Image: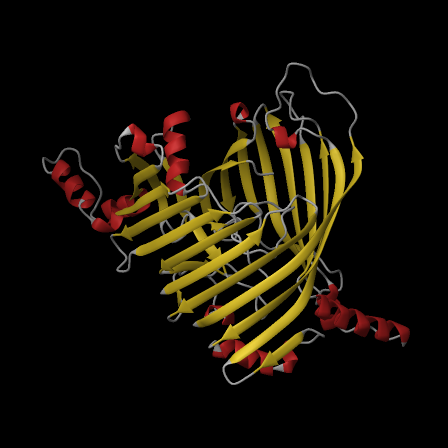
Length: 470
């Protein structure tokens, strides 16, 4: 959200999955690694934006796909598939994605006094407005299936009002038990936890992640190199400097985790016969929980901002490992997460046959949690009021998701992070990043959905297509 790949609340919040955003034509931005200890590693694969729009045009009779962002306004996108011989088309998908900015066009017309149909020059006036290059943007994308296990994506994105086009190359390789991703991009768009967008002149990443079942061990290894100075791109974003982990330098991260799923209750009621669920992944009523615990180690080379952070003990309370040298730093810590999920209904009937609630509690730093818990326990033992800073340290990052079927394949969904105002005696909860989404389940595909979502904090709207995601 700018949904987290738009993966939902049950996914672990520690991995740097791509964020969905209408700011770029390819619909993606990388999440900024955590500060000061980045826990995110794996960047999940996603159906490319040109393929999504091509599907909407071919199979959902949508000539244009809309998107909206606070700075750029309302835009319409359309894809043209480049004609290729059938044998080549099986391995090569090449497209031209075009975008027209409706809001800029309307604003430009209003500035010139509007359209006067009685005047003979009104058609020429429209042509003059349409010749403004700032109204247009395009993305050339080429996806090549090198082998059955290797996919290469090349993209070039340019806009009339931007001087630096975006260039990206991504190589995916599937091993028997691992996924490897190599990516080079310049500039690369990042989004931090408060919603600011940052452009990095150059980014190079190699990511190796294990493929495992829902329960069991997994590990991730990532090496990334950033060059140049981060530049804030969106005017509506809040103030503040660039995150420390975005400054130039080399970063290597390794994480190991273990996840355990627990089925508390599973419905034994039979499903409707001869009726296919709207989504096979959402057809089993249940109550379940899962727990994840892991450890992460991060090494920085050349990032002076990170070095300064490791020297500031007041900002790094806890028992984690922190070692720094003249031009390097090593950080290590543990993390944990607890998730709860409940579902009622089989998503088969026409009305109100699906109600889902997900809740996730993340502990990004176990060392800080133990440090804060020890202080709170000490204060309570001595009949003292616990320090608010210690209480805030032990509270987990909370995310919830609620989904309700409206009618047939349509359902509404609300996702948000939850924070508490500890300075207020009543500790009122606040929804810090609410996102409202309308989902349309594509029943014929088993588990696929078209989603239209709106982020209240960022004031962004986007229509997406997703397969095999819960």
